Image (cartoon, rainbow, N blue to C red):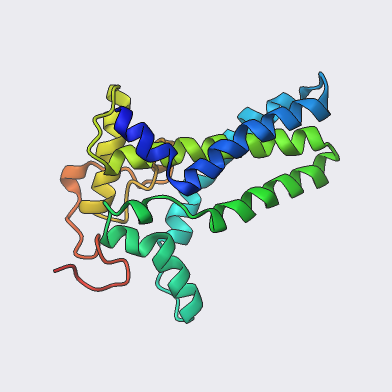
Length: 205
């Protein structure tokens, strides 16, 4: 497990997020004083958790766009990950993708609340949610056995998405949205997809 932690936290994109989290937390508490802005941390984490399913299902699994730039973007963000699910370089969301979104979260929060404390701490919560997502995703694809039964269930669920059928099991850190929106079927009733490894539509050979 020590090797896994080292591999995970020393990956450049993860390292940047890991360093950003305490900076955001300390800065948020310094400017917010003793107000309720600390609630921004759990709110931000829950917000990311809710968006995890929607982004995975409706953005990363959208039909391959005809525009070459959008197609190339989705290849890097997800299509190639399905083709090479064990490739560490394709496992994590690149910071050039997640960074601007986190900044946008902070900017929108600042605009809505007119509070730097809320903006910084809600962004910190979103970073925490993202790090939780990345760790769960990492464990699902690497030779790491989750300690808990819940973790082992999540790993199996994600591997079903990759190797059984890409149209189901979109949740990575939880299955709440899958259960709510009908994408958590009994695996025995699901046919193996010919395009689970090729989201561009080609059959995997």
